[in-house]
Image (cartoon, one colour):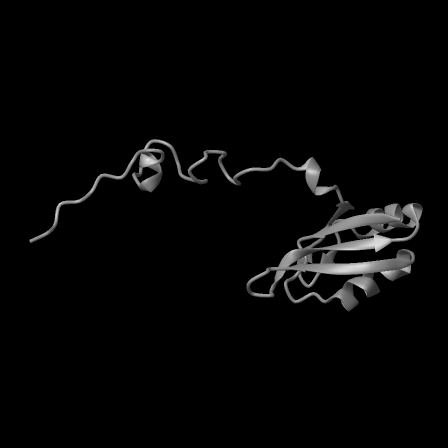
Length: 122
C-alpha cells in the first residue's frame, strides 16, 4: 500500500476523474480530494492510495509533470504530517506572517503589552 500526493489539480477535479487517471497504472484503493472545511471547495490537491508500491512508483513516473485541465500535476509519495514543520506559516514570527520588515505598524507591534484604558471622548 502506497499513498501518493497529487498536487496542482484543477479545483473542478473529481475523485472519479483521478481514479480514472491512475487506474491504467495499477489498482487504486482510495482517492480523496482535499476540500476547504468552510467552503467545501477543492484546495487543489488530493491523495491516491494504491495497493502495489511498484505500481505506485510507475504511476508517479508516468503522471508527474503531465497536464490535467490545463495544470501541470505534481505527484510524489505522500509524507506524514509530522514530517512538515509546524507553527505559523509564512514568516515564523509569532505575531503573524508575511509582513515585510522595515515598515508597517499594526497590532503585532504591541503584542504582549497591557492595553491602556482610553479617555472618554466628550
